[in-house]
Image 1 (cartoon, rainbow, N blue to C red):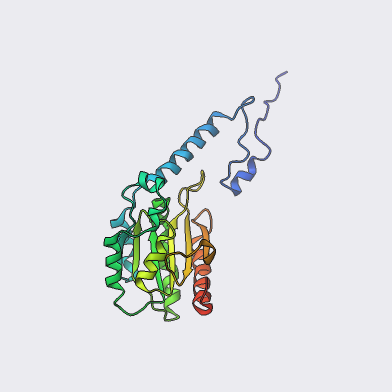
Image 2: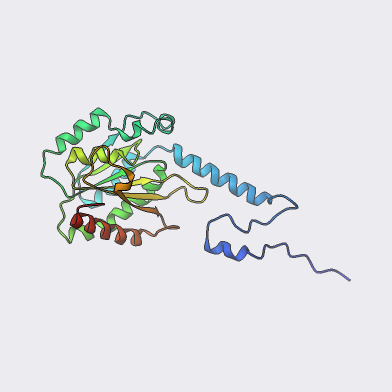
Length: 240
């Protein structure tokens, strides 16, 4: 009599349809199956690639053009990605040439909101999702007649670089869209940081944050409505 085949499927396997987390991987004896090991190595490689990827400035500029806002490219005092990972302090400081560009721009009327798009730890994230998020939220802001400044695209940037950018432009509120540290299932996650009265020396506790903006995390439309609410409240209450 032929024995029925043994079912080695993990009883939790159905949960994988609800999450990208590494659950129900199964086993091969006392080890993880080869397929799970290869998937882990691929995810690790994607995360490393996201960290070292350079921001495609030309593509970003084209994707932002439908917004009809002026754009400026700036960079921190960092020269390359290796230096970026070694010296986070310099990623928080504007290059003198970039500071001069922004100080020239500040001669125009003061603005309520300045948006910064920064590569951070995943240029891939902002390349894929930053323009889509702004295309959702800026039309909502224009209904309230807020004065929106130029869009700043920043290379080799840390979150606090926005403080110096906002101060140079004399912005009431600075909103930075930045690539978050890649996880092993999320190399394309965008973080959004809001800072009222940006100036050098602001602490992270003085910011609001919307995290994990991406199709498999917080959807773009949901993030846009949350961001719109936080911007309105910040400008009304004069805090973040």
